[in-house]
Length: 287
Image (cartoon, rainbow, N blue to C red):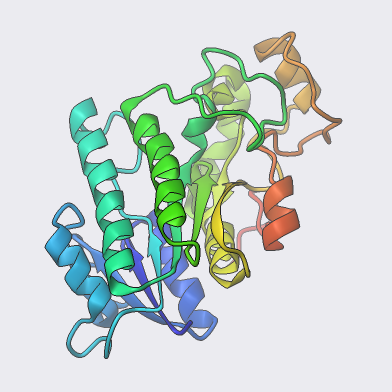
């Protein structure tokens, strides 16, 4: 692979993904409705809800690619519940993902990495999780139109893979994406641990999210796999034992966890992708 199309490349995670891929020698085609602040030379405006535009972009763009791209990273979406009415969120996201999957199939592209979501695990956990750390082993529990679309995208990928056994489609269930500038707010979480119980106090540094994307592109797999992608620690200095006793009493531990170890299990991503977070809000900020 050498040419990677990144939908949503102007967004919070997309910016980190584009930067990381370029740093590792890939050529990038950045597809979004919003122009990026940097890498403008890579940008093509595409409405992902328009199948013709998506097919055209993946099949080849004058002055950008000589033919179809080699792989697609699909991050473009309404990024969270509540940012648009429910039906608008669902329609935009499921349609965009279908268009990307189908356009890739038509163009002969067999590597797709796309943004699923931690929300399929049952967030905001008003119904407690079946166990912690949560992992990929229990059936999705969507609790919003946004999460429902993400759940159906995972099933849709399985059907596309059934149609084409050569397809590699990897869904990354990203936790709450954070940049370095967001870390200044983390100490305030200590005053109200319940405010972050909705995702078991998890997060993903955008740079580590980009690492996961690159490893998913490069791993030798076929078919569909989904992975939780989170940082190795929580957003809290309060120990896990205290957080769980106060917020999720009675929820069983699937295994022992460290004092501040993530409760969004990344064991599978470590094992199959070689993913290992390199960044933490506990580290000094980089220049």
